[in-house]
Amino acid sequence: MPDSIAQTTDARFAQKFNCDSFVFDHGLHHHRLYELDNLVGLARRLGPASAYWSTHAADVADGWEDNKAHEQSLEEAIAGIEHSDTLVILKNMERDPVFGPIFGKVVDDMAARVGPTLQRDNLHGRATMLISSPRRITAYHIDADANFLLQLRGDKTVYVFDGTDRDILPQPEVEAFYAGELNAARYRAEHQDSARAVDFRPGIGVHVPVEWPHWVKNGESVSVSISINYDLRSNAQRARVLRANHRLRRFGLSPAAPGISPWRDMGKIAFVKGLDRLHHHA
Image (cartoon, rainbow, N blue to C red; front, top):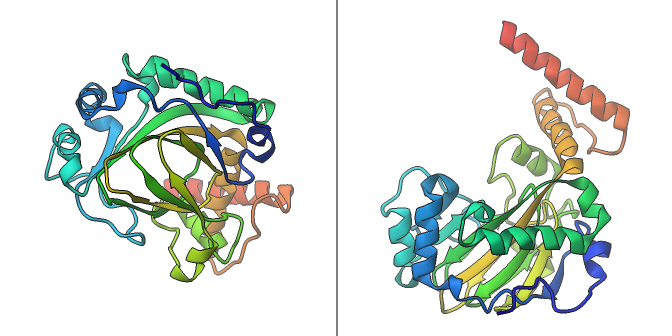
């Protein structure tokens, strides 16, 4: 029963990590654990607090909906996913007693495959499972972590956009995202042709760097994927600057992007901390 990340040595993991998107092979898709009854059991063990699920139809530009009100329980959503329009996200799978030994190892092995660049910068690694209905669309979005998305069951198309292109992802949208607006990144149809379209099938994976926009369209069967996510130390500091920039824009300023001037970055963070202290004592 193969359970390896990749079948051959591939230098792109080290060379392109968090700099560019690339497609690779893996051997995780032969496991029988991905049948729906096993996934229902996984959801039961993890519980609703470790999950996001939506049973409402979604389009590419819809963003994420509120996760508080549900027409179905988490277990019901997975059990009926073949005949609905549902997306389920199960978080922290490495903690599960059944799936954990497999995917906890994958989190560690993938970090080793990237090498020192990730090992020095990694704050936390985790595994997230995505289960979705036939023809389901996962809306356009960005993430604050670097991830490797691996297809385990079914097929779909993943569209990945260059997150460094400020026509595609303007700086104010990035700042708003880190200030708490999860749907800040706005889909623009005129940029669709610039996306990399990855034909996902079991055994295929794709790397998505931090903040690289992407959306997904499922094929004609239930899709099961695993996302191996890494929170980066370097991005945590960068996120503080971006949150400060978001606050500064409210004063009519146009702050520079993080990294252009380290001393200005520190000054912006200190300024916002001072504002927060004043607000707290007011």
